[in-house]
Image (cartoon, rainbow, N blue to C red; front, side, top):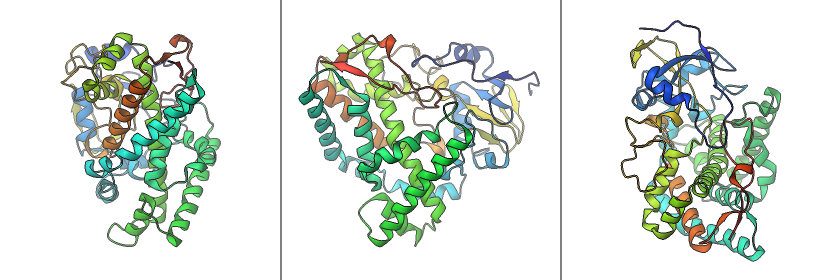
Length: 398
């Protein structure tokens, strides 16, 4: 039955490094569907368990599009209904079908030589300069940025212009509503001008492919194309670089597992999956879903029109699914993690992100075999006021 007790304030507290709040484990055991009140929007149900998570992410009775009809429960000053992230079928299907052509396993594999070349080029720079180096600004950011810029057709040399605008997408307390709106408009204006250029001179890139599709079977509007390209740039640039730097932090704080991986490179595929499960890339919850009819989750009735908030980092530590869930185990074989989401909104770029992580970690461990953090990991600084967890710098020596 529905729980009408007063909602608890959420988030529960500040995040520390990549630690997961122990209250999630308590909730999974005792109250897996909890009524909460976020800094912005209406009250919602916080969902923490794995089985419920798959249900709300995969069941069409939970809608993303309905969020636009509500004051969406959220951690950000402005709601994020941008493009494909705020759609249900059939509009979501139309945009996803276009992008699916660019992110097939076969097409992604064709990018491997370019990705490997970029990883080694950046390591060459680190070696030439000599230790110490900063894996964030001298490797992770330019590595992820170059790959997504190449794919989309965005000039990488423009990154000093657009990089600051990308933070508007996941800012919680670090930016005001006015700053978020202004930077979002700047990013959309930049992408719109780039698309105007591609209309005059098409190239072999994803932005040109969107423009072509907009004239034919996919019927993409100008707004949809601009927002979609912006989301892809943010995901490929900020999210991938953050996942990579978080993964390196996990390895540096687990020296025994790092040594195991250095000595057994064949473990890299399973290690990457474990890093995607173990490292909580998002600080708290992902986008709210709205129930289109009354639905029960773990004995709690979610009524039609009510919001649920998926705490994916909690689901990835669910003891009923993952043995020794709080341990980082690069040999873990049974690992159906939700690091890329689930259902129709599952990350389309997952094959590319996996390849980037594998290539980057393999190259670093091969070229810098005794790589280690140059300072105490407890002294590292993390970005504040953002949904995505990321270090500001990761100084290393070798």
